[in-house]
Every structure is written in C-alpha cells, then in structure tokens.
Length: 173
Figure 1 (cartoon, rainbow, N blue to C red):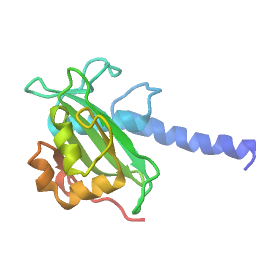
Figure 2: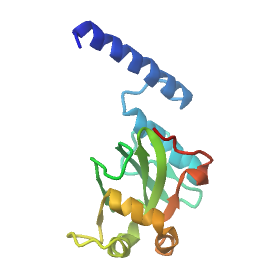
Figure 3: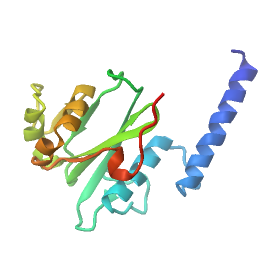
Figure 4: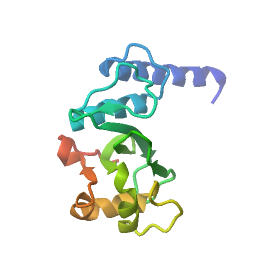
C-alpha cells in the first residue's frame, strides 16, 4: 500500500470514529473510542453516572448507592484464543472493576468484579499467580469459565452480562 492509499484508509477510519463519538455525545476526544464507548456502556448497563471529568482518576462510573466503578475493555479477535489478556486489579476507593469483553469489534460481554473479593474469584478461577487478593490475571479461558458457570461466580459477587442481557446478539463472521 502506498502513502496515498494509507491516507485514504485513515480518512475512512476518521469518519467512522467521528460518527461513533457523535453517537456517544462526545464532542471532542483523542481518547481511545473503545474506552469512551465502554464507560458509557457500563454506566447504562449498571444504571450509573459518568463523572463530569471524562479523564477522572481512579474510577469511571458512580452508582446510585455511591459505589465507584473502574471500567476497562479487552479487545480480541473472535475465536477460541485471544492475543490480548488483562490484569484486573484492586484500586483504593473503587468498589468494582468492570471489564468489557470485545471480540471481533462486538461486545461479547461484561464482567464486573467486586474489588474486595478478588482473592476468592481468583481461587475459583484456579489462579496461582502472586498477589491474588489484589489482582486477577484475566484470560480467554477465564472468560469462558465464567460464562459456562456464571452462577458460581455470581455467588462470589461477580456480575456477568452476555449479549442476551443487553438485547443484542454478537455477529458471527
């Protein structure tokens, strides 16, 4: 691909990005559009509010009971293996850590970890890494395990949402 072709490809991305940001009611943002989307998606899913400052340190969504939620996303291609993984971690003053799972640029689900329960969740996932009380090294196998036995993880305070819970179906390739 030559330089002119690359500039043309960037123009297509730019238009799509601007359309997404406009739909999210974000007038200007140099932040990752998937981060902007994820924060709004989790706020809508949990019935929370975004802070006035979009780059608020430590948390991204406030719930009606005063709980704070940190929001992150994990994007991967569709399929049985992921190329990206994620470390979920406890943040002082934050009650929940929400991870939006994106596969093939579609929301495959959301898992919301209670920050005070990371140790039991890590144990239930069969983790053996250091500092399990404060971190969970989250993998594709973990997501599949949570989806396969959501009630087990819900009993530990984990909230699990799949496309059927938010009214969409993940498109297939």
